[in-house]
Image 1: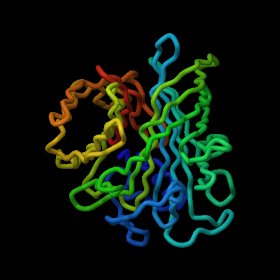
Image 2: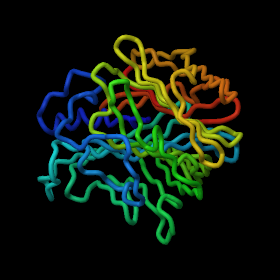
Image 3: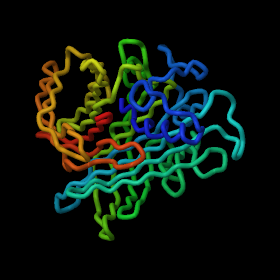
Length: 354
């Protein structure tokens, strides 16, 4: 669902910008009422390339990329790139410094035993950050995710760049596979109370390029995953955080699943099984057995970094392990996010609210 997450961080930062206290309900206020914004309802017909661009009527949205990378020596790397658009209030967007939009960028490179992360914050309307559908480009300062010049199809040939004090990456992402609509034809429920987002992915990217860590450059390649979501109220007030997986199986399938945790100890669990041709099947709670096995102490918190995942109907029985257990995003709102590995594949895991 990636509620892609961290819009949570953005929302709290937004609250600070707007001098309004963050709501006490739900994780990072994501369950607060948003009646003045456009609502997510079933039955949307997606339109591309328009839906690659921003959706100003909604309160929050994000462009989110992860990649599981390897160099020629077999060393494992991961990168994350996320841009959030956050509306401070409903209504028409104003030009210049009067714009009621805040943009937040997160980037990370988590090679064990290190974990490097950085964030950028920008006010909308002045060109420092933004997104456009044609030609596709999403950027904040000099971080960007953009269609290569001359590419015939949006999201088929992309460049991804970001840097921090101790890391940088420059990757080319290519795919000739179809986009995947998550949930019910892109309508992705997040609770039994009806909270939802519009959500699609490109899970079939192949990444090639360079990752720089502490001044040393590595040539890397591997699978990458794009998530696109937008909503106005993606959580219920009783929900405290989430565990989100995107997995690339060596046998050709892809798997997205998430569990949104509740204050009473329960959770909303769902996912999407994607076959090698890009056809999808929605997975429900009864289809998935997800159990944390091992916890790691990080920053005074107990974080589940090793999981058992079983989907009997798909003959899947794996144990995912963090490539770097200390992949802690110590940013405005801290959370865990990093690459995972398992027998038969690799993927990414994000965990918030711990």
